[in-house]
Length: 278
Image (tube, rainbow, N blue to C red; front, side, top):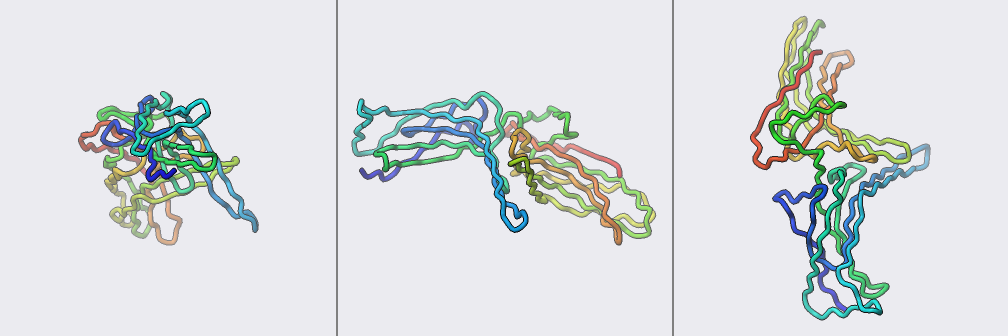
Protein backbone atom coordinates (compact mmCIF):
# COMPACT_ATOMS: atom_id res chain seq x y z
CA UNK A 1 0.00 0.00 0.00
CA UNK A 2 3.02 2.29 0.10
CA UNK A 3 3.18 5.08 -2.51
CA UNK A 4 6.56 6.77 -2.26
CA UNK A 5 5.97 9.50 -4.81
CA UNK A 6 2.82 10.82 -6.51
CA UNK A 7 2.91 13.92 -8.73
CA UNK A 8 1.33 15.60 -11.73
CA UNK A 9 3.32 17.45 -14.38
CA UNK A 10 2.79 18.82 -17.89
CA UNK A 11 4.73 19.78 -21.02
CA UNK A 12 5.33 23.45 -21.73
CA UNK A 13 4.61 24.79 -25.23
CA UNK A 14 6.89 27.84 -25.18
CA UNK A 15 9.98 29.08 -23.38
CA UNK A 16 7.89 31.26 -21.04
CA UNK A 17 5.80 28.31 -19.79
CA UNK A 18 2.49 30.09 -20.47
CA UNK A 19 -0.81 28.89 -21.95
CA UNK A 20 -3.70 30.78 -23.54
CA UNK A 21 -7.27 30.12 -24.67
CA UNK A 22 -7.51 27.08 -26.94
CA UNK A 23 -4.03 25.71 -26.11
CA UNK A 24 -3.64 21.99 -25.39
CA UNK A 25 -1.96 20.74 -22.21
CA UNK A 26 -0.39 17.27 -22.13
CA UNK A 27 1.20 15.56 -19.15
CA UNK A 28 1.32 12.50 -16.95
CA UNK A 29 -0.77 11.33 -14.01
CA UNK A 30 -3.82 9.15 -13.10
CA UNK A 31 -7.07 11.04 -12.38
CA UNK A 32 -6.83 14.67 -13.52
CA UNK A 33 -8.85 17.78 -12.82
CA UNK A 34 -8.01 21.09 -14.54
CA UNK A 35 -9.39 24.25 -13.04
CA UNK A 36 -9.28 28.04 -13.34
CA UNK A 37 -10.71 30.38 -10.74
CA UNK A 38 -10.45 33.77 -9.03
CA UNK A 39 -10.68 34.25 -5.27
CA UNK A 40 -10.73 37.32 -3.00
CA UNK A 41 -10.78 37.47 0.79
CA UNK A 42 -10.20 40.15 3.43
CA UNK A 43 -11.38 41.18 6.90
CA UNK A 44 -12.52 44.60 8.13
CA UNK A 45 -13.35 45.88 11.59
CA UNK A 46 -16.91 47.19 11.71
CA UNK A 47 -17.52 48.51 15.17
CA UNK A 48 -16.01 45.99 17.60
CA UNK A 49 -16.59 42.96 15.41
CA UNK A 50 -14.41 41.81 12.48
CA UNK A 51 -16.34 41.09 9.29
CA UNK A 52 -14.99 38.73 6.63
CA UNK A 53 -15.54 39.42 2.94
CA UNK A 54 -14.90 36.78 0.30
CA UNK A 55 -15.82 35.96 -3.26
CA UNK A 56 -15.08 33.31 -5.89
CA UNK A 57 -15.38 33.12 -9.65
CA UNK A 58 -14.92 29.84 -11.54
CA UNK A 59 -13.81 29.99 -15.17
CA UNK A 60 -13.64 26.32 -16.07
CA UNK A 61 -13.37 22.84 -14.54
CA UNK A 62 -12.45 19.69 -16.51
CA UNK A 63 -12.02 16.11 -15.32
CA UNK A 64 -10.24 13.23 -17.01
CA UNK A 65 -10.27 9.61 -15.79
CA UNK A 66 -7.07 8.01 -17.07
CA UNK A 67 -7.38 4.51 -15.61
CA UNK A 68 -10.69 2.75 -15.12
CA UNK A 69 -11.00 -0.06 -12.64
CA UNK A 70 -12.56 -3.51 -12.94
CA UNK A 71 -16.25 -4.17 -12.54
CA UNK A 72 -15.91 -3.94 -8.78
CA UNK A 73 -14.15 -0.56 -9.07
CA UNK A 74 -10.70 -1.93 -8.28
CA UNK A 75 -7.49 -1.99 -10.28
CA UNK A 76 -4.23 -3.73 -9.32
CA UNK A 77 -1.12 -1.61 -9.92
CA UNK A 78 2.09 -3.59 -9.77
CA UNK A 79 5.18 -2.28 -7.92
CA UNK A 80 7.35 0.12 -9.88
CA UNK A 81 7.05 3.45 -11.67
CA UNK A 82 3.83 4.10 -13.59
CA UNK A 83 3.13 7.01 -15.97
CA UNK A 84 -0.33 7.88 -17.30
CA UNK A 85 -0.31 10.36 -20.19
CA UNK A 86 -3.19 12.82 -20.52
CA UNK A 87 -4.26 15.60 -22.87
CA UNK A 88 -6.92 18.27 -22.57
CA UNK A 89 -7.67 21.58 -24.25
CA UNK A 90 -8.10 24.84 -22.40
CA UNK A 91 -11.53 26.28 -23.28
CA UNK A 92 -11.33 28.58 -26.31
CA UNK A 93 -12.74 31.60 -24.52
CA UNK A 94 -11.00 34.56 -22.96
CA UNK A 95 -10.28 34.45 -19.24
CA UNK A 96 -8.15 36.75 -17.03
CA UNK A 97 -4.42 36.10 -16.73
CA UNK A 98 -2.85 34.37 -13.72
CA UNK A 99 -2.22 36.85 -10.90
CA UNK A 100 -1.40 37.01 -7.18
CA UNK A 101 -2.62 40.16 -5.39
CA UNK A 102 -2.77 41.54 -1.86
CA UNK A 103 -6.19 40.05 -0.97
CA UNK A 104 -6.93 37.88 -3.97
CA UNK A 105 -5.57 35.72 -6.75
CA UNK A 106 -6.37 34.21 -10.13
CA UNK A 107 -5.01 30.68 -10.45
CA UNK A 108 -5.03 27.87 -13.01
CA UNK A 109 -3.92 24.43 -11.92
CA UNK A 110 -3.95 20.66 -12.41
CA UNK A 111 -4.95 18.30 -9.60
CA UNK A 112 -4.31 14.57 -9.62
CA UNK A 113 -5.92 12.01 -7.34
CA UNK A 114 -5.17 8.35 -6.64
CA UNK A 115 -7.97 6.68 -4.67
CA UNK A 116 -6.80 3.52 -2.91
CA UNK A 117 -9.57 3.20 -0.32
CA UNK A 118 -12.37 5.44 0.87
CA UNK A 119 -9.99 6.90 3.49
CA UNK A 120 -6.66 6.48 1.72
CA UNK A 121 -6.33 9.03 -1.10
CA UNK A 122 -3.11 10.49 -2.57
CA UNK A 123 -3.33 13.98 -4.06
CA UNK A 124 -0.98 16.17 -6.09
CA UNK A 125 -1.36 19.68 -7.48
CA UNK A 126 0.62 21.94 -9.80
CA UNK A 127 -0.18 25.39 -11.14
CA UNK A 128 0.32 26.59 -14.70
CA UNK A 129 0.48 30.17 -15.94
CA UNK A 130 -2.40 31.35 -18.09
CA UNK A 131 -1.99 34.48 -20.21
CA UNK A 132 -5.00 36.18 -21.73
CA UNK A 133 -4.57 36.94 -25.43
CA UNK A 134 -6.34 40.26 -24.92
CA UNK A 135 -3.28 41.36 -22.90
CA UNK A 136 -0.89 40.88 -25.83
CA UNK A 137 0.03 43.24 -28.64
CA UNK A 138 2.44 42.95 -31.53
CA UNK A 139 5.29 45.54 -31.58
CA UNK A 140 4.71 48.26 -34.14
CA UNK A 141 0.93 48.38 -33.69
CA UNK A 142 -0.71 51.25 -31.82
CA UNK A 143 -3.40 50.06 -29.44
CA UNK A 144 -6.29 52.29 -28.43
CA UNK A 145 -8.85 51.60 -25.72
CA UNK A 146 -12.07 53.57 -25.47
CA UNK A 147 -11.80 53.94 -21.72
CA UNK A 148 -8.03 54.43 -21.43
CA UNK A 149 -5.97 57.13 -23.12
CA UNK A 150 -2.84 55.04 -23.62
CA UNK A 151 -1.46 51.49 -23.53
CA UNK A 152 2.17 50.51 -23.02
CA UNK A 153 4.33 47.39 -23.09
CA UNK A 154 5.95 46.26 -19.85
CA UNK A 155 9.49 47.30 -20.85
CA UNK A 156 8.93 50.72 -22.43
CA UNK A 157 10.23 54.08 -21.23
CA UNK A 158 7.57 56.78 -20.89
CA UNK A 159 8.63 60.36 -21.47
CA UNK A 160 6.58 62.73 -19.32
CA UNK A 161 6.49 66.47 -19.91
CA UNK A 162 4.93 68.76 -17.34
CA UNK A 163 4.50 72.47 -18.00
CA UNK A 164 4.53 74.31 -14.68
CA UNK A 165 3.42 77.92 -14.20
CA UNK A 166 4.87 78.86 -10.83
CA UNK A 167 3.25 82.16 -9.94
CA UNK A 168 4.05 81.76 -6.25
CA UNK A 169 6.89 83.32 -4.29
CA UNK A 170 8.57 80.00 -3.48
CA UNK A 171 10.28 77.16 -5.33
CA UNK A 172 8.19 74.07 -6.14
CA UNK A 173 9.41 70.58 -7.03
CA UNK A 174 7.50 67.98 -9.08
CA UNK A 175 7.33 64.32 -8.04
CA UNK A 176 6.65 61.54 -10.56
CA UNK A 177 4.95 58.26 -9.62
CA UNK A 178 3.95 55.01 -11.27
CA UNK A 179 1.72 53.04 -8.93
CA UNK A 180 -0.59 50.04 -8.99
CA UNK A 181 -4.17 49.91 -7.74
CA UNK A 182 -5.59 46.51 -6.82
CA UNK A 183 -9.38 46.33 -6.39
CA UNK A 184 -11.23 43.44 -4.73
CA UNK A 185 -15.02 43.00 -4.80
CA UNK A 186 -17.22 40.92 -2.48
CA UNK A 187 -20.72 41.32 -1.00
CA UNK A 188 -21.27 44.60 -2.89
CA UNK A 189 -18.16 46.04 -1.24
CA UNK A 190 -14.86 47.17 -2.75
CA UNK A 191 -11.45 47.05 -1.08
CA UNK A 192 -8.48 48.87 -2.62
CA UNK A 193 -4.75 48.37 -2.17
CA UNK A 194 -2.28 50.82 -3.75
CA UNK A 195 1.48 50.49 -4.02
CA UNK A 196 4.10 52.86 -5.45
CA UNK A 197 6.23 51.13 -8.08
CA UNK A 198 8.33 54.12 -9.12
CA UNK A 199 8.83 57.45 -7.35
CA UNK A 200 11.24 60.06 -8.71
CA UNK A 201 11.77 63.77 -8.15
CA UNK A 202 12.06 66.29 -10.95
CA UNK A 203 14.02 69.54 -11.25
CA UNK A 204 12.88 72.41 -9.00
CA UNK A 205 11.00 75.31 -10.56
CA UNK A 206 11.88 78.68 -9.08
CA UNK A 207 9.36 81.35 -8.06
CA UNK A 208 7.62 83.47 -10.72
CA UNK A 209 8.79 81.31 -13.64
CA UNK A 210 7.25 79.10 -16.30
CA UNK A 211 9.12 75.91 -17.06
CA UNK A 212 8.66 72.51 -18.75
CA UNK A 213 10.05 69.63 -16.70
CA UNK A 214 10.83 66.33 -18.44
CA UNK A 215 11.13 62.95 -16.76
CA UNK A 216 11.58 59.48 -18.28
CA UNK A 217 10.14 56.52 -16.35
CA UNK A 218 10.93 52.95 -17.44
CA UNK A 219 8.19 50.40 -16.80
CA UNK A 220 9.78 47.41 -14.99
CA UNK A 221 9.66 44.30 -17.23
CA UNK A 222 8.50 42.04 -14.39
CA UNK A 223 5.23 43.92 -13.80
CA UNK A 224 2.04 41.87 -14.30
CA UNK A 225 -0.20 43.01 -17.15
CA UNK A 226 -3.29 45.06 -16.36
CA UNK A 227 -6.30 42.96 -15.30
CA UNK A 228 -9.57 44.46 -16.43
CA UNK A 229 -11.64 41.37 -17.30
CA UNK A 230 -12.29 39.80 -13.88
CA UNK A 231 -15.49 40.68 -12.03
CA UNK A 232 -14.06 40.29 -8.50
CA UNK A 233 -10.42 41.39 -8.94
CA UNK A 234 -8.84 44.19 -10.96
CA UNK A 235 -5.25 45.37 -11.40
CA UNK A 236 -4.84 48.90 -12.76
CA UNK A 237 -1.90 51.28 -13.10
CA UNK A 238 -1.69 55.07 -12.77
CA UNK A 239 0.81 57.80 -13.55
CA UNK A 240 0.77 60.63 -11.02
CA UNK A 241 2.59 63.96 -10.86
CA UNK A 242 2.49 66.10 -7.73
CA UNK A 243 4.04 69.44 -6.81
CA UNK A 244 5.69 70.05 -3.44
CA UNK A 245 4.28 73.44 -2.48
CA UNK A 246 5.29 74.82 0.95
CA UNK A 247 2.41 75.68 3.30
CA UNK A 248 -0.23 74.62 0.75
CA UNK A 249 -1.99 71.51 -0.47
CA UNK A 250 0.09 69.77 -3.13
CA UNK A 251 -1.67 69.78 -6.53
CA UNK A 252 -1.60 66.54 -8.50
CA UNK A 253 -2.45 65.08 -11.90
CA UNK A 254 -3.35 61.40 -12.43
CA UNK A 255 -3.41 59.46 -15.69
CA UNK A 256 -4.64 55.88 -16.15
CA UNK A 257 -2.23 53.46 -17.81
CA UNK A 258 -2.77 50.01 -19.34
CA UNK A 259 0.24 47.65 -19.34
CA UNK A 260 0.30 44.96 -22.02
CA UNK A 261 2.66 42.09 -22.67
CA UNK A 262 4.82 42.11 -25.78
CA UNK A 263 4.02 39.02 -27.84
CA UNK A 264 7.39 39.11 -29.58
CA UNK A 265 10.26 37.34 -27.80
CA UNK A 266 12.99 39.46 -29.38
CA UNK A 267 11.24 42.81 -29.47
CA UNK A 268 13.50 45.84 -29.76
CA UNK A 269 13.24 48.54 -27.14
CA UNK A 270 11.10 51.45 -28.18
CA UNK A 271 10.19 54.72 -26.50
CA UNK A 272 6.69 56.22 -26.42
CA UNK A 273 5.83 59.68 -25.25
CA UNK A 274 2.90 61.05 -23.30
CA UNK A 275 2.62 64.72 -22.35
CA UNK A 276 0.17 67.08 -20.73
CA UNK A 277 0.04 70.62 -19.34
CA UNK A 278 -0.82 71.81 -15.87
